[in-house]
Amino acid sequence: MTAAKRDVLAPHQDDLASAMSYALSGGKALRAFLVLESARMNRVGSGAALAPALAIECIHAYSLIHDDLPCMDDDDLRRGQPTVHRKWNEHTAVLAGDALQTLAFWLLAQPEGPDPTTQVALVRSLARAAGHHGMVGGQMMDISAETRKTPYSLEQIKQVQHGKTGALIRWAATSGAVLAQADTAAWQALDRYGACLGLAFQIWDDVLDIEGDAQAMGKAVGKDADRGKATFVSHLGLAGAKEYAADLVKQACSALDIYQEQGDCLREAARFVISRVS
Image (cartoon, rainbow, N blue to C red; front, side):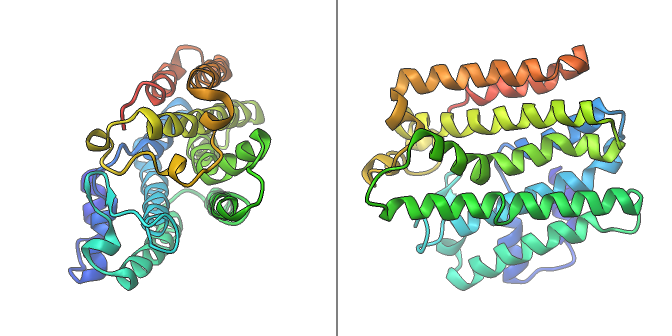
């Protein structure tokens, strides 16, 4: 994956390409892993899955660049390094994010990719997952929460995070079934897995915002509490949030029953999500 990311931007050496490459470096690449693993489980070769894996990482990186901007979360650090707008400037950060978003769809539309029907399915579903029905819509709700007179309810927080965090994770988890043109049962199993994993991931982020170490996290902690933001932890308490995350991981693992032992790597990924320190 690292080499593939580098190769995509290799012909370009300007500040924009450098900022894009910088944003793509580091991180857990969880979403790319989900694409590659769900493809393997559905008997799709890694070569066919590489473009979707890169595409989802481009979308994720763009979202982080914009999320860190002063008009949003105003963060100075990401993965232990200066955020893109701090290392360069705000206009470079905005444009790098924009370019990464368009690069994702360029990757999915390559002529050497899967058949046109599958390509259209991937493009349409990623556009929905990344847009106002998914990640961007969830981000808008999340930002709007900071100026509300009353905090979000637990159900509203779930709605926010199903969009902001969960939509891309669900897309990644189901992409292997789409590439394979698998039956509805396979897609639904992976979609259920992705939905549970996405919520568990966000709950654990909320836990780490309270318990995490800033150095290990590579970014500031405690910002949600400082803003008085409603989170899973503020509603459920630390113990309750951890218990809920663990239950969601169990549900995610059970959703893969139709894959039997072929789903073990994705089950391990789900367990990792609630054991990580960053």
